[in-house]
Structures are given as structure tokens and as C-alpha cells.
Image 1 (spheres, one colour):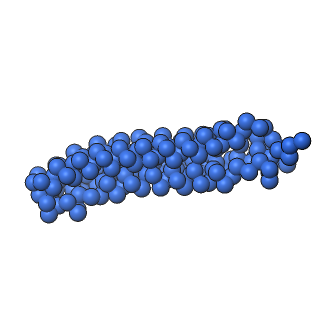
Image 2: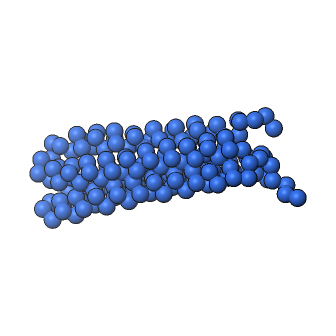
Image 3: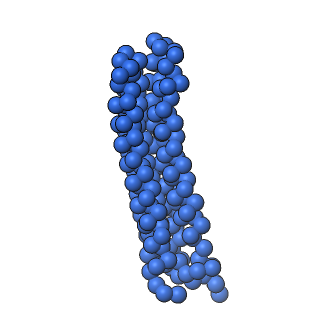
Length: 164
């Protein structure tokens, strides 16, 4: 006889949410880093003194992976069906939490990569564009932050399905 309480398939969805948060956020971080890194390398040939100033998009893209890691840790610590009942509602809450953070991170990484690539190249030719590039990058990063906030809220809903 098993001491498992709750729905036996529910942890699958919870762990899928944790994996989705980390995988999609890291895909966005990798794309943003690679795409903007190509722009930094290309710009560095013309203006090597601006390389350190132009590394901002690479750093901002790298932060996206941390958002996914945070949600994945929150979700995985909330899955312990032997200690507390874990129902399908909880699994779906964790799945939606991971998907919201992960897909927001993926889209933000794509935006940061594209803006970072074009922005650092343009900044090498016209230094007045730096502030505008940074503002656009901040708004792109905010998309991932929205996903992180919604992911935390959705993850906190797990465990509220039934009174145990």
C-alpha cells in the first residue's frame, strides 16, 4: 500500500512546469546573449574602446536564465506528495507558473538579442543612441519580469485546491 496522497499524475505536471521555466528562460538567455554578442564582436572591430560599454545587452540577456531558475526552484520545492497532498490543480498551477515565466523569458531574450545586436552597432556609429538603446532593452527585460511575477503568483496558488 502506498503512502501517496493526492493525484498520482499531478507531480508530472508540476515537474514539467519547473523544467519549462528553466528551459525556455535559458533558451531566451542563450539567444539574447548570442545575438547581441555577435553585434558586440562586429562593433568591436570598428570601435574597440566601446566593447565594455556595449556589453549591457549580454548581461541583461543572462539575467533571464536566473528568472527561470528562481521559478524552477520555487516549483520543485512545492512538490512533495508524501508530506502534503498534491492534486491536479497544484500540478496545473505549477505548469502554468513555469510556462508563463519560461515563455516570457524566451520572448524577452529574443527582443534583447535583436535590439542589442542592432543597438550596439548603431551606437558605434552614433553615440547619442546609447540611452535610447538602454531604454528599449529595459522594456524588453520588463517582459520577463512580468512573467516572473505572474509565475510566482501562480505557483503560490498551488496547495489551495482543497482543505487538507
